[in-house]
Image (cartoon, rainbow, N blue to C red; front, top):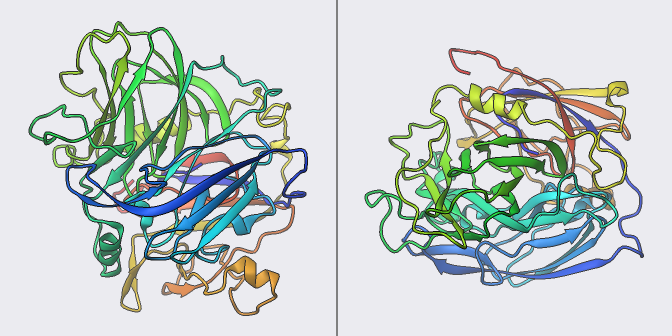
Length: 475
C-alpha cells in the first residue's frame, strides 16, 4: 500500500519463498498490444496509450495461486515495461516490470511476463513504468479473487466494479517529460479522469459541452464491491459518491475492519475496495466525484472528475452542486486521521485459511533500521532531480537481477545509507543491503511540502506507527 506525508514506521519481512509455479495451479493467459490511439478525454484530441485499442486497458482477473501469463507486444515508438503494482514477486523479481529488474521491451518487440500470485488476494493495478508513460495511460485493474474454499469477510457482492481515478494533462507524456527534464514543474493538471473519461457537465462554465463521461449503472437494493485506484501521477484525490456511504472492506491485499466513510482521500498509487449499498430512492442520478486535495479549490476547480451513478429506476439526471469535499487546504490532519482510522481485520482469512493477524508481530526481531528522507527536488549536475536520503538513484544499464545472475561486477553498490547523508546530494546506483529472513524497520520522513506516496515493489508491509512533525512552519 502507498503511504502519505507523515513519518511512518514500517516492518518488512525480507524472505525468499519456494518455487515460482506449481503444476496443480491453473494458468490464466492474456495478450496485451500496447499502442497509441487518439482520444479526447477532456475535449482536446491527444495521443493516449491504449492496450488492445482500449483506454484504460483490460482488467486482469485472477484467483489466488494462479500462474499469470501476459504476452506484451510493444507498438509504441519507445521502450516499454509494464509494472504490476502491489503484486508480490516471489522468486520472480525479474517479472516485476521496472528498470532495476527488467530489460525494456524495445519497439516492435514482445515479452511474455509469467508469475504466480501466490498466497495473495485483493485489488491492484498495472501501468507502464518507463519514460513517464503512465501520464498518457496504459494502465488497468488487477484483481486477485479468493479461492472458493477461503471465505470473504462479507456477503458475496451483487457486482464488482473497477473505478480508476487520476489527474490528467492534455500534453502527452513526452512533452511532460521534457518539461521535467528542463527543471520545470508539471503545473496544475487539466482535469481528472474517471475510467479514462472526462467530467459530467455538472457546471456549464467549467465543463465544456460534448465531453464523454462515465456512467455506472446499478440496481436498487443491492450491494456492489467497488475497487478504486488512484492511477494519476501527482495529485491526491478525495473520492465520494453523492448520498451514499462507502464501507471500506479491503486495501491492496488486506481485508480491513469494515467502517463507513462519506469520502476518502486516495493518494497517488493507492487502491481501496468499498462495499456500496444502493439504498437511495433514485429520485435522480448521483454524482461520483474525485477532486484534488491540499490545493486552493477556487483555483483548482477544473481538477475535478465527475461520473454518474445511475439506478435502473432513476427518475432523472443528476443536478445541483457536487457533494462537499474536506475544506482543509493547509491542514492535512483530516487526511492523516482518516488514514490512521483504517485497521487490519485480524480475524478474517486472507489468501490462506488462517486469520490475517495470526503471525506474532510482537515478537519480531528487527535486524536493520533505515531512515528514508525525501526533500524537494534539487539540482545535480545541472539537472533537477529528486533524492532519497541524499541519493538520486541512477538506473543501471544492466538490470540488477541480470547482473546478479551473470555475476557482473560494478553494476550497483550495496551501500545505501541507514541514515540520510549530511553532505551534498549525489547520483548513485545505490541499493539497500537486506538480511535474508530478516525484519527491516523503515522510517519514512517527508521533508517536502507536498504529500508523498511510497511504493515498495514486490513487498507487503505493516504500518506500526506514525507521527506529525512541525518544521519551519510547515506540516
